[in-house]
Length: 250
Length: 236
Image: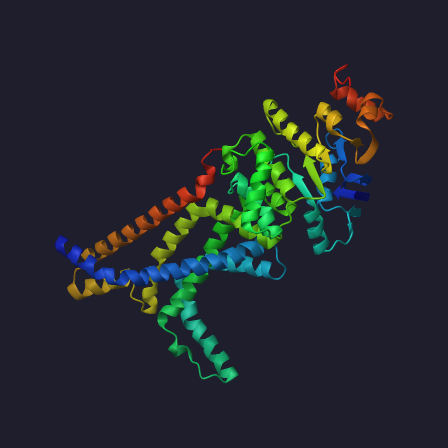
């Protein structure tokens, strides 16, 4: 269970998050939508402290971090409970696919090497890369790299996986394979918060959709409700702009 | 005066006895320099309070003064400091018992450290921000991140500059003759003056240095090949 309370973040004078409240239950897949500059990526990055919020509280399981005065230990524990999948994959480029997945297990969680290797190989198998264990990121396509990224996040067995526009950097024909993997792990009941522009995918995979604009949550609800009958004017406008008429029939 | 080609060979053979000293001076300065340089680079990048301005001052002062000056300052200054400290503490130790090559080791390491710190710094700055974020996101601490992710990539990208620094340091060890250390160039001088064949002896020294430099270059190429295996797919 994740609870964000009054999360605030400013870059200089630019207030990007204006007090965000959000609760995510275990097993939920929450998709955050919003126009560019709405603060959705910043919010995601605040949850594991890649961005330092200026105020508010983050609770994950039994850990509550007060963002005004967080201790180093709290930040470290917070990161231990979350995992991130990046838009630009950010695989360790001097390590093979297998080593990328193993790294967190061995270095952070002190899992014995042999066991870490076995578990990592299984995860790579699961994301369809059983034959690429020893490939370096530079030898993989974008879609393959992102699937390694997902395996790396899964390996840590986090309470929540944060996915920051996981398909935005991909060639269109590679998007499908990554979304398929995310769908598969969503079905396993892993809690996820996803920032994405893939509307069809959002509708399909989300248990809840959150619409953000200008640093606040405008509206949230079940995908069927929010896509079909948005209540707020801003949500309507956004959905109209990005979804051609009639494409999203369920 | 006529060139005596045969003597070049004779001198060359005699110079070989000084190769270990040159290599020793180079190895110690490069290794200590790399340690000092990495520490200084990290202190400057992370803006460690108190140490940060000290590291910056160290780099600008050392790079702003000749290596020969460093050696002279260390040779004349360090014994004074050591002796007064030892005296103050009532220890029987005196600086006379330090071998002269010790001063060369210290001085060259300090010089190399300043140059290496800029090489390492450029390497660290070249590591993509995303690598840091990924490492933090999987729960690594900063020391783990540096050791496992950043420094390996930083050294890999700094390798060409690092090899230049190693070669530069090796050539600069010729200054050790000031401290009466007989490295290749000093040996050449000795061989030359005992036989009155200066040009031949210095040609031999030049060839020897060239050979050692080629060895360093080869070693670098080998390392580069190994380290950049992960680049074999082309763009990252």
